[in-house]
Length: 363
Image 1 (tube, rainbow, N blue to C red):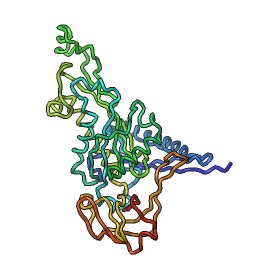
Image 2 (cartoon, one colour):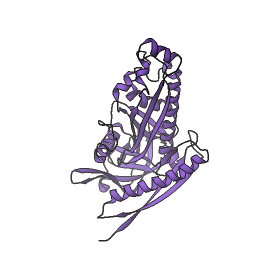
Image 3 (cartoon, rainbow, N blue to C red):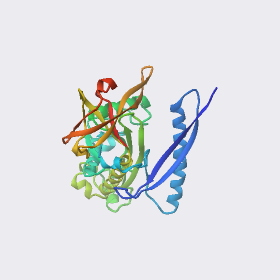
Image 4 (cartoon, rainbow, N blue to C red):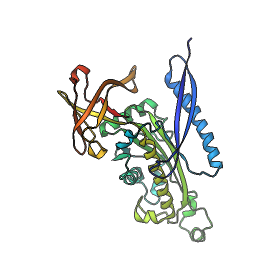
């Protein structure tokens, strides 16, 4: 049996402030044997080994006093042109693993309030255009997401959500825990109230969230990380403060949660910033090509984009992702509005079989 070797290189960026223009890059490589043409298995093995190597470097950094986390990007910024455009990112609803935990303090709206807060934090980003779609959730069974539901289901659901929203990336997540450390401490008895007043019991509350970023064209998982903190929850069990309300943000717990959301937003921006800009073609008529990005994304008349045919890949009835094929044609933008742009090809698109759903790329 002939064996081939897959070489996987990951580029990681040690976190610095929000724009991360001067990030320190860490490059790790790994190899895996491709057995029986199973490229997916080889890729997973190589990726796992690469992350272990990266974590070893991270551990060394932490021992040197750097306590921040790493944000992962599969593309180093190879040219300045990719930075000229804001990539469209869809923020889906998060799933809550233990919904009864959210009833304490009336935090049930966190599933939609958390992504809405990320959108608000990133509205002024120069790297991405956030779009709220918290009514959509990827994970119905959240216990082991994103692997509990098969990778293929998440793959196809992420791509479907991307198409429906017209975005390049999809952000989702699972709220693992907002549990009180000691629920008995909040019983409404004289002894318990006295102990709470004198802080003789554990009044800490958890906040633990897994964040995922999927590529909307291939469905590939580009980034995942768990964010965890805890802080004092001083309110009685029946007191209600909506998630991210002014009253919530005045609590020590709310301030720590907001700090974690700022970290999430920063890592999302860093992960997307160096990715190539991609936009789907929405309409083809004669030689005119219309695509779903405009001045809000930084598109200007005269900009040029490479044209790619998009083909969905299946193994039997199982969706495997998408593959892009260059057609060696360049589209020059002639007209631009806020959310779409248009250009004219020199070649008849029908000769190239260019159609709705194909892709324009700027590296």
